[in-house]
Image 1: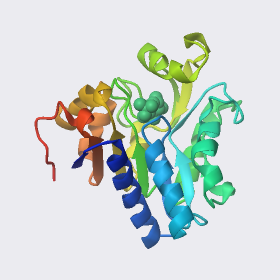
Image 2: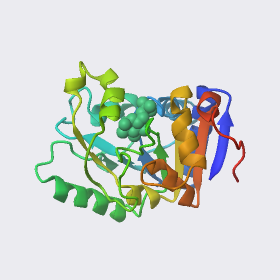
Image 3: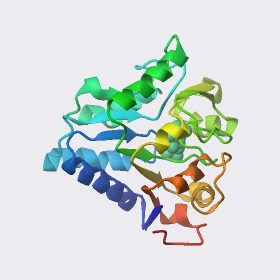
Length: 247
Ligand code: GLP
């Protein structure tokens, strides 16, 4: 794991966007894995700025999002489809035939998950995957206890995650109870991973993921097994780490 502790959220975001931009300049047909949540927003803003000001070209990029809520259609204000549209897609020159997000309204969820995995395979696999982390150590919607070899599938959301994400909804009851999520096995096949974390509410999760034992109870800890995993965190999120360098 390559650990980088930045002074603040903006530096974290710039560093992550810089890595993605560098990979994209080398490989214009980059396959980019994307995450939702508040953490990657600064990275997305930086990528949008690079697109506008430096002409960073996304026209040949394929994207795969980590997850989507079951029961929310693409135009639902709280869907991850809408989130990506608002915060990234509409600001870039992506070819919209190649921006993949699981369909929360799929009739046959299992078949849809298999199709999603197949699209990742057909794209040649994800080159670089951006990740956030839940306070309970979840990756995407792989909640504690998720199989470390899991593939894209439906998962129930923990009460803790539903409470954390309730801030985006009118009430806790409005937060979906299930999601489609890439599996941990799927995420681990990406050639590079970038985990972002900001703020003291993530300090325990970051410590457990980076310095704790590898365990399904902390899904993000599996990143210790990845050959090219960047962990980019700001100082508050790094506060509980006992080591400040990992090579
Ligand atoms: C959700 C997403 C995760 C994300 C997490 C943290 O549960 N499914 O992919 O990492 O929230 O979100 P935030 O960045 O808002 O703290």
